[in-house]
Amino acid sequence: MKVTVFGIGYVGLVQAAILASVGHDVLCVDVDQSKVDNLKKGIIPIYEPGLTPIVEETTQNGLLNFTTDAAAGVAHGKIQFIAVGTPPDEDGSADLKYVLAVAETIASHMNEPKFIIDKSTVPVGTADKVTAKVAEVLAGRNLSLDFDVVSNPEFLKEGAAVNDCMKPDRIVVGTDSQAARDAMTELYAPFNRNHDRMIFMDVRSAELTKYAANCMLATKISFMNEMSNLAELLGADIEAVRHGIGSDTRIGYQFIYPGCGYGGSCFPKDVQALVRTAHGIEYQPALLEAVESVNAAQKQKLFKNLSHYFKGDLKGKTIALWGLSFKPQTDDMREASSRVLMEALWQAGAKVQAFDPEAMEECQRIYGDSQELALVGTKESALKGADALVICTEWSQFRAPDFDLIASSLTHPVIVDGRNLYDPKLLKDKGFAYYAIGRGESV
Ligand code: NAD
Image 1 (tube, protein in one colour):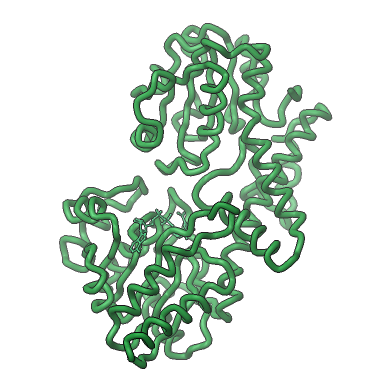
Image 2 (image 1 turned 180 degrees about the vertical axis):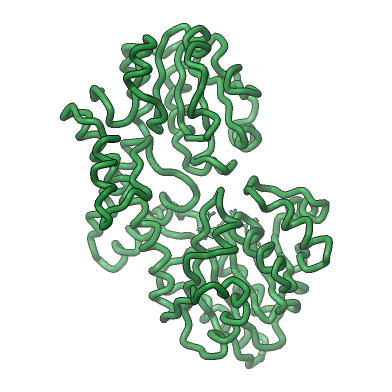
């Protein structure tokens, strides 16, 4: 099938490459000229395991192409995906300007019926706005063309996006049009062979499904973080509690890790956006508001622990930081806990020596050259001359470090671990002050 994808970010690029890999003819459109130029040269703008060979193969066999020419994009696909960003507006609600701009672009150039598929995460009611925008522009062109606006939210996880798109848990499609349903069934048939993964529903339910999924996951994290704070105050070990509750099949072990707060491009903005949606209809989403505020407080935790150890005097200290991305297997630093920590440290007059396996370039792009931040090439070099070590991201290479080397490199034997990677007893025996999450004295 001929498919156009507007927006070549994490979602658009992965989805486009996966669709091309099974034989669909995909044209990607982005307004970012340099991104398009780079992709044409085979330079992939994001780190996503397994993506590069698929993009290389599909561009070489001509099934995946990139352009900034929106008119060519609209002419290409019977199916037009909208996969642009929906960042938070000033009040936290989803900013729809990019989505509506693409809707306008499609309507300005289409000369035959199209299926317009919204893959961006958008508030309930957005399909109606897209429909109205397309109808308005077509009316202005004195054209009467059939089109369907479908909600097809994306559930991929950064770091596992290729596998998630190849073998999705579910493909949610919101539409009341049989023609759109048939087109989506045909498009996704290659990913639907093992068992039926398609879940059809009305458009508004599909739009809400995406927010409900992310809010549920964020709730699990904030719940565990709240339990970890209680564990500290009550002298319990949250890791034992986690094992204890996870064994209940109604709860399960998945996604119940306490830590230094959730980040990324989705959970923070989607929880906030649903809160704003609720406020807009005069509903008080007490649980979601608590999820947000627990998370905001949790992101301060690493700084509080450091400050506790150094008795509030961080001025002139150098802190070694392992992990910048908001989670392992990605270079994405949007809303990462590392950013909250670094900014608090700089505010307090400390310097940071940081290492991350993939996010160094992104960090450099965000913060530029700075006296307060040294980005170093290995986790060991981050320790040199540092006063303390903090772990923000649970990359596998941080899980079994040489503790003797850490002890001999740091001027103070202190590790602040935002991901509970180590055994508190082992570290105590080795002479470290070890601050984990929910595993010891509260500060
Ligand atoms: P992104 O910011 O990585 O990429 C968006 C791209 O859209 C950019 O390359 C930008 O240049 C392009 N763009 C903006 N306006 C455009 C226009 N008018 N025409 C063409 N291109 C345009 O965003 P992302 O992380 O891929 O997220 C896209 C959407 O998918 C968001 O709504 C997000 O919430 C949702 N989502 C993201 C993830 C994730 O893990 N990143 C997962 C599921 C859903």
